[in-house]
Image 1: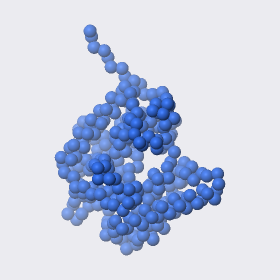
Image 2: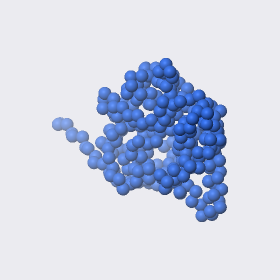
Image 3: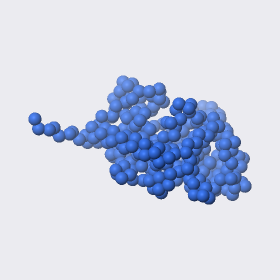
Image 4: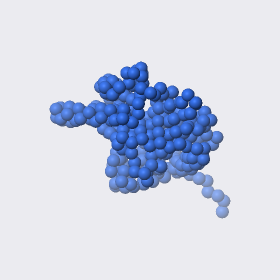
Length: 294
C-alpha cells in the first residue's frame, strides 16, 4: 500500500496550489483513471472523506509493519491482533478526521459499526498468517520511502510495504492489499505499482528486483511476477509519456474527466462536469502558446 508522498486528498484546500513535481504510483493511476481526478487531488487538493475500506487498509498495514518489531518467535496471529487497538488509537490521534467514520447520531449503532469494522481488520490480519510465515522473515526494509530522478528529470517516488533481501542478495518487493485479487485479465494493472517500484529500485541501486509479490488479504491470494530489464524500460517509457501528458494539462488547464464505473465512488461529483458540476477556478496560471507568424 502506498502512503501518499505528494500533495493529495488529505491536504487542506487552504494550502497554495503548486505545479506537479513528481509522480507516485497512486497519482499515476489517478491520471490514467481520470485526468480531472488527478487535478482535484494534486493541484486543487480538494478534501475527501475518509472511507472505512481505505482506513482499514492503513490500520492493517500498520499492524503488519509493527509485528516485525517483535522477535521471530513472538510473531503470532494473537500477537498481531493484540496490536490492532493501539495502532487504531495512534491512527486516530494522527488523523482526527477519522472520527467521521463512525459519527452516527446513535452512539450505540456507531459502537456496533466500529466493532464490526475492527473485527474485519482482525480477520484480514489472521489471513496473512495463512499466506506468509513471519517467523521465517527478516525484512531488510519496512515502509521504505524511495525516490529516484530519471535522466529526463522526471522524479519518481513512493513507499514500499516490505523489502526482503536473500542471503544471495536477491531482492523481493512485497505489497499488502486488503482487497481481493483481480481477475487474470486485470492482473497487469495490479502489477503496475510493483513495476513502478522495481523501476525506482533499479535506477537507484542498479539492481533489478528478483520478484514482485502482491499479497491479497481480502481473498487469500498471492500474485508474483519476476521482472526483467525490458519490463522496466517499458514502464519507464510509459511514465515519460504519462508525465508529458500531465505537463501539457498543467500548462493548458485542460483536465478532462474520463467517466468510468469508478465515478460512483468519487467524492468530487459536485464539482465534476459529468455530474452537472463546475470545477473550481483553475489555481495555476495558464500559459498560452505563442502564435507563429503568418
